[in-house]
Image (cartoon, rainbow, N blue to C red; front, side, top):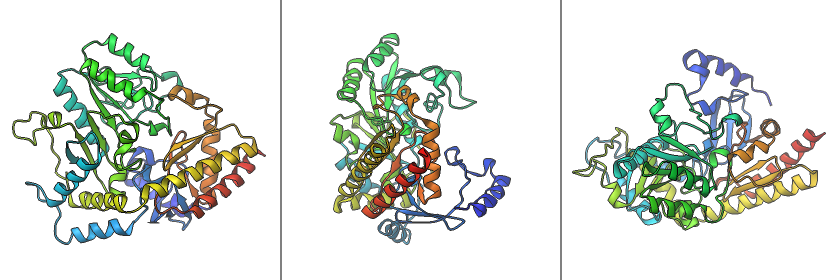
Length: 430
């Protein structure tokens, strides 16, 4: 494929935006400029067509420009938008939906991005417990704010060390965020003992999808629930990615473990800006949206008609159509097909995923935490994805990134992808 028009447009973009892109995660080589999307497919400025598994890091659970969702948004915008006072019928209806489906949600508040939701969850936890410190896990991502912007995709010599994710973060913020190893309850217990009665919250992706797909081992999530209860700590599940994509009740429903607070976003609105924080009533009522609440919660665009309408349409699709059956079956088809190809070609690999999410690590065992991923052949991982892109299959050409299947994908798309994957891998191992 050629990318001449994309590269030319990117050069223009760099004149008016640093790096020519508006979030750091989008800066990849080649410098794509996209112009159209429909269902399972995206098209760039050079008219190259791709089967899309990037899905904008996961929001598109139904597919790009999904008509049912778009029609609801267009219809709602004929009568309402944003008022800046009171509430709307859409917000009430959507809050009821989350209360109905999510085990942890007694009450909910809407915002616009996952980072906002995790920020509010942590601030609320500190207010409730009157403690400063929080625990996060190496490799997990919870947004761009200072509370959690450390030890994400750390260099190997910085794993479990002091690794701020940005210049400009206050030392106090870094030092009040403790880092533990995922799937290691002993490490969490030790950290709690060393910081006795100082930890306000434990926040985690119940499946660390920021680094592909690391599955929680049996007993790990329940062990965190028990430790939180024993130590008076708020347990926060960051289900920005897993929520709705892994089931209407989030991954917490599948795992049978209920956190105190949960954050949502991405797949909830099938690509429209929307996020939420929900949890137990006794905690949520501390927000000052409730008279007498003392934890600040605000946002001009919270509960906007676009996001609420899109969320209602998306959730109703999941309620009324076999969305999860379809994407889970296609996920199994993809993972099983990739395993067969790697075995046939003698390529050392570990194919993993959950439901509609999949990735292939080029290593010979199941990773349990971030440090295990040091054994993944990152160069092969990225080269493989770039070659897939050149053949019309879009997987993010960055090490340790997950892929997403949507309701718009078909068995034919999966089979075509597997054929292209085998072709590319045969070329690579020559």
